[in-house]
Image 1 (cartoon, rainbow, N blue to C red):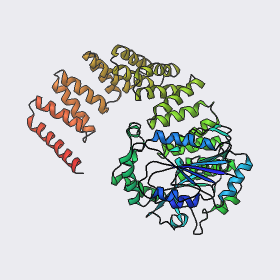
Image 2 (cartoon, rainbow, N blue to C red):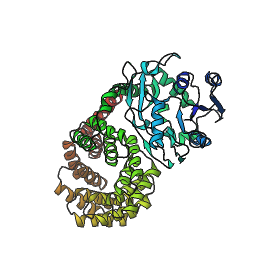
Image 3 (cartoon, one colour):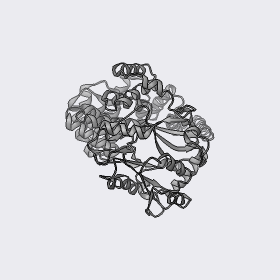
Image 4 (cartoon, rainbow, N blue to C red):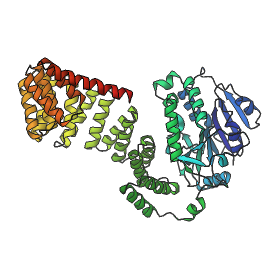
Length: 534
């Protein structure tokens, strides 16, 4: 079986000897060197099976050009190799007997390999003759490194790598191969000093292309942030290998037959009880044996999102959507995650796909409208907010959001109509009354605004927002004594509220209560000084 490997290089002299040794079983290695000025080229040119191709990006890291290489270079191996590996030099595909496993993959008819990703951790960079597995036995499970770095070039037409190759969209005859003992080990965190030095160098080489697209933003983080990230990863790291270099617990794991239903129920129980790590392990166990279990993927995405791992949740959902593209709920969930990650195109496309499948999907209409607002397409949001109101006229969120958008667009009379419709459905909604009051204030209809605020206070006498808004309006109208009473009432409910203190101090000053106003202002200054020193 012939295997070709394609990789990128820029000043990799630390990891390069280990990379060449690890992948010594492949038949051909093509290295695209981006102007290395250390000893990398020397090492590469002394290795017989390596072919070096230089490319120039003007001394800058241009992710667009790197992605084109990853997505196109391997195509020359069609008809020449059985498998290709497309990876970075700090990525090591690992199995105790990788060549035999790849033979088994080919025999099974699988075409794309899906490993389990780990960020390996150490206290210092390796020396040329040291064994990486023995030197770095611990790693942090990292879902974004479940990268499809190996595939059959004769079955795959396009691999579709996105920036960093963390996500791919293969086209052709796609059949995933995944095993619980098959890892992709990422050797980047080889001591905090090594990471900082690498980040600083990458930050210096970052192109305007990358900066505009917010790629590699972690390279610019402070030393303190890098330290915190490193420490967090150390806490999350677990033993990956035994002292003998075998995957920890592999033998016991492989002897236990998969019981899908039992494992899934165990994961759901763990999720319900808040044992999120246990739930993740059980779901991963299922996916290790069967990467196309839709329910396991969707549950995994939910947990990852709950634990703040939105990007990894998105990866899991993209796999789920690829398996069952007719599920509107999956597209909606992907839209929610993408919107949270500020990924405009993925978010908008996902919401639209959900609505294409289910036009009456309330949450998808609301989600798309919210995304339109977030990505500065407010006008496009309006019909989707209106559709959401039509679908569920008793819900407050669509009314509120639509009224706010219309007010921002200065379509005040239309916004007033939205508040009126909202109050027809729910006449005692404090948020609707408060919002309507603010809009009436903007329109100069002061008496009506006061009435709306007073109505809101009859329903919710302790609403600080309404008390403050009514006090502010009365202050503007010169009704200082009434304004003072509302500000005092609000501040009694929230004594630490600096905005209320400021409004109260201004009102007192205009009423001639100079001493009390001065005391409040001094308290504000002292509080700000404490905040600044803290």
